[in-house]
Image (cartoon, rainbow, N blue to C red; front, top):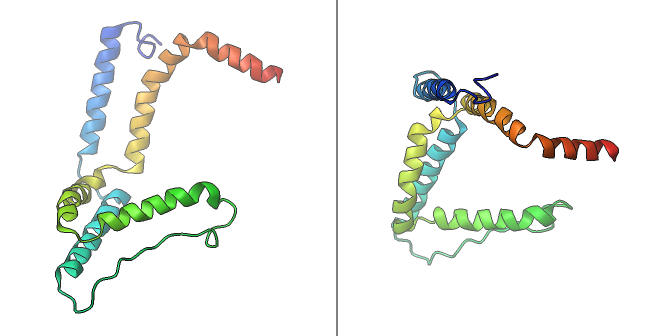
Length: 159
């Protein structure tokens, strides 16, 4: 209890530091993992390369601008909140993957970094890290805000 509640700060800091070092060392260990971040970044690098190549090759007819937007016909009632966000994401993706050389030079390093080191971020590691930091944070927050928490709980029980 003293360790998690930070009553002995030196001892809690020591165990928190050792735990942090453990999770960082686990993050850089070599194991077979599947990371969606790495897959998405590698897919993005491929799409960016194809768009850049397509934009670099001279074409006879002028390139018409592609506009793809979702409409209310495509998405039913829930589209009211989702539609503006989806259109913003699609228009941003069109700008990013346009094949424009200056945009390619800006986006390519981020995608290459994600493709190379994205496998380090797995769901299991994220859950383990979140659990570790939560175990040191939540008890202290509960003690600091216990009166407010109890008042909210009593109000919910009364309702």
